[in-house]
Image 1 (cartoon, rainbow, N blue to C red):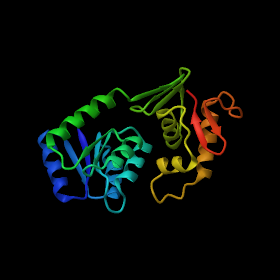
Image 2 (image 1 turned 90 degrees about the horizontal axis):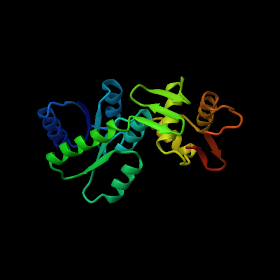
Image 3 (image 1 turned 90 degrees about the vertical axis):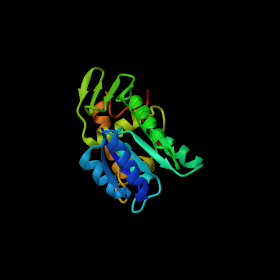
Image 4 (image 1 turned 180 degrees about the horizontal axis):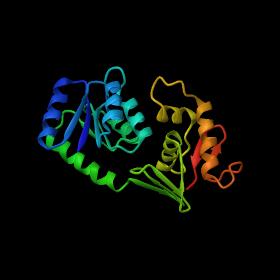
Amino acid sequence: MKILIAEDDAKVLEMLHTFLLAKNHETFLAADGMEAIEKFNKEKPDMILSDITMPRLDGWELLYYVRAAGQTPVIMITGQDATDDVVKALSAGADDYITKPFKLREVEARIEAVLRRSRATLVLKVGELEIDDKSKSVRLRGKTVKLSPKEYELLKLFASEPGRVFSDEELVRRLWPKGSLASSTDIKRYIYLLRQKIEQDANNPQLIQTITGFGYKLIA
């Protein structure tokens, strides 16, 4: 398996690298979040182990970027007794967490557990909508819907938590990397384009609904 390790502590990075190599995994190393994004895009890893506190771009921004791009499993590495970080990580879409200091056997066990869960969640189903994240394909009422990459990311994010209202600000943060010039105007444009493709009547949307003053949600 291809595993990306993002960790600014050189000793921890080397320890994880050596251990995972011994377990016959291919590893890619990053000392900060920006380098991790570059290697994520280039190498297409099967899993990511990410520290939270890193220079240039932290683990939170890396997690948001990866979640916007797909369902690659992410295990966050937190500080000792960092309960708030654990809650935030799981709420933001992390698959699991490891608390420092950790034992390598725990790392192995959590990787295997996350892989078992991720294999069962590659297909999202919401009503008559089906999203296959492995093939990046979408079917609605049995028919294939062709979407652009950003339209796909937006729909997948909605489908990951049907019924939940997403604000413009959260959608921008989750769908574009930190420092992007994207704004609520871009969100409105992609919502419009997505509705044209999945709604029976785009002027009277039944799937992606606007909650005035709050944002948008996907109706299950």
